[in-house]
Amino acid sequence: MINVLIADDHNLFREGIISMLKGEKKIKIIGEAINGKELISKYTELMPDVVITDINMPLKSGPDAVKSILNKYK
Image (cartoon, rainbow, N blue to C red; front, side, top):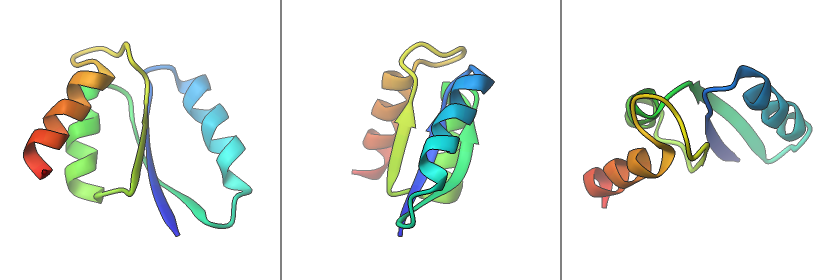
């Protein structure tokens, strides 16, 4: 099973991604984040296998959040 965390500040877009992935038997959506800071927090809590993130989000961009995660967990 591949555990996925989705981060996007647009609810409709997050719901669309979740809807597309729900039918996949080997994929499980384990969490959602609405901004970069929440992405970091949820990553730490959930430890997903994959993160799907928006680039432009409030509080911290997707790339900046991913850099923070990589620096902490490499």
